[in-house]
Amino acid sequence: MPDEVRRQGERVVEMFAACAAAPDDRAVAETADAELAALEELLTGLAAEDAGGGGDG
Image (cartoon, rainbow, N blue to C red):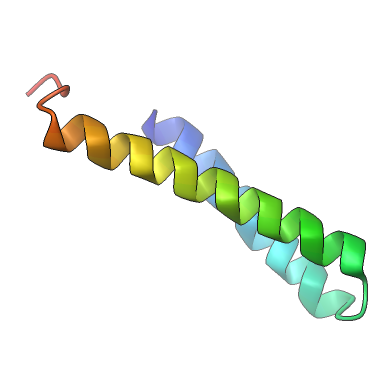
């Protein structure tokens, strides 16, 4: 899952750069928001795995 988190984090950075380039584009802003929500979901799942002892170490 760490690779997924990294890739999603990169996607979030790309989308926020797109927001900076087109601050009035609502579609870009909505996509950035969705990408950020996806990252949050991945991180929440990772935290739940850590809290539940689901790791391998």
